[in-house]
Length: 411
Image 1 (cartoon, rainbow, N blue to C red):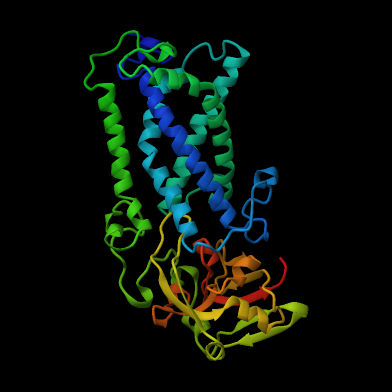
Image 2 (spheres, rainbow, N blue to C red; image 1 turned 60 degrees about the horizontal axis):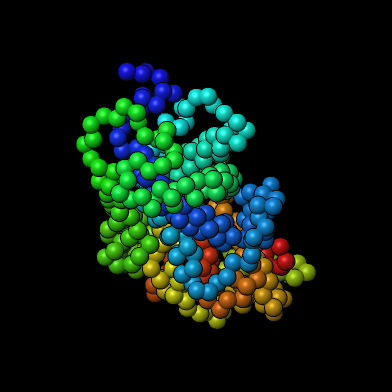
């Protein structure tokens, strides 16, 4: 028996073959394209061109060619796009692993390059495999709130996505015609082309290729069923057994919905949020500034909005009933009758997105509030007391909690 992985006879599984690989490849072709598009939309939702505060990838250059002002309609837009991105990514993990397993003999094939074209193909394959494992691994770790990256998740995942998708696109251009030809021979166990995937000395089969595809598909459906619920309301959320923020709602009232950071985790003490100490500083045109305590804010016109919270990890809440002062009304207090951009700063002193910038269209939306109440009661400390921002369709981290200062103007 050959002991070297570079020998075709080393790989004895009878499941490997061009038809099996082609089916997996076509599924990934569709799935990864959706993942890439929704990932780009997620990046755009952070408004990275608005301010260096929001831009976690300052050297992106041409990679930001498509960026646009993120809209506020519909209010569930980010909840939808990011829910699809994360849920689909998790569901595709069995397909990705099966695809890598099916082509692993090609990674060890010798000689490494038979021609320049073959060398480019092998290089694209290495980038594809490495990029795929990197993107899915960092994505899953972020979903699980395990921030063990050698740097910030945002630039790592962003640049990794472009490397991975470039290799993926090159591989798709080279292999899609062959994959489609193989799929036309559904009953042929050894269709023409890609013969190196078929073992010259196969072991006895214990399951058919269609059975193996059924196992892969079943694994994907299981992950989908135990993850997708955290993007929905009511009983469906309880089905998200494998995801943070899944399971039943944490309760009712002002604390009856999920959060990522507690006040204690963010270092927010009751002494600095009490009525004696806390003041909101609002600055605007020509340096005009006002300081407002919470009773003074309560004397302003208050408005209500029913809005969800959706986070980059893929989880979201149902619509919560917020009440507070419109952002555009605060802008008018300091001389901006026409809505402009705003920089919002939190009492939180450390960590990403303790400051966040919002575009003028987000400030202008009448549903965008500096919220003082939620679900009929004062905000809880963990949900941002004494005041937090809530903006329709914005990623959760842009809905700053424990707001201390707001600076209106062109950013």
